[in-house]
Length: 128
Picture (cartoon, rainbow, N blue to C red):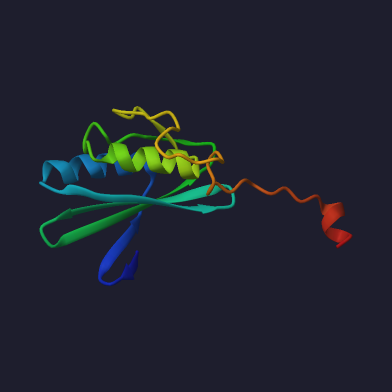
């Protein structure tokens, strides 16, 4: 667990994350934000919920080729965040209540923040 301004960020699995979001909703929390950061071969996605002055953050490290289940059935506000991380970072979100099919933003490049895996051959690396 990391601490930043007294708001811990808890690393969880994507399967456990859905259960946590359901529990938070049932306990009166609301969706605060979903953000993504691209790394080579995976995306780090942080889901934040809050209730009054209590904010909780849950992080998953999602490989580029894996899917995550939408939370829009729990938190309708997740729809906008999920369309954003899908379109800009290439996060594969399935089951969204409203899917803008990569037309949420007017951008010229598909998934501009996505980082692909760079494959380096041993021979190429040895010649550098």
